[in-house]
Image (tube, rainbow, N blue to C red):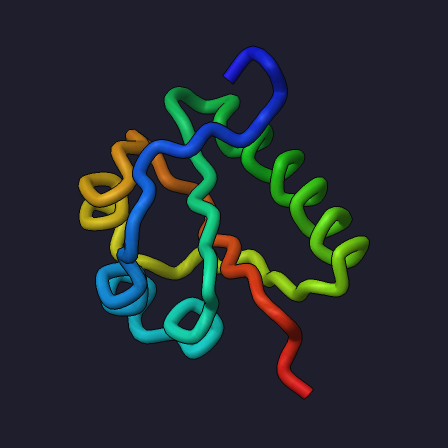
Length: 97
């Protein structure tokens, strides 16, 4: 988005689908919210990294945890999210103690 904000593409409960597409990684399967980053073209990888950095910083500010997940089923995540080239999943939630 041009306004430098996260843009919701799909709202709803996709926890089971994201869990499966992330190869059942615990951090994704248990997260109450997950941000999918990506875009179109080569620059989308760099931009996704910059956005991920800001999500990390804001998560810490709100006492939340996150981790960049790069292992997932590309085509399935693209179909679910509508993002041509997904780069990262950022599950968000309270850190495990």
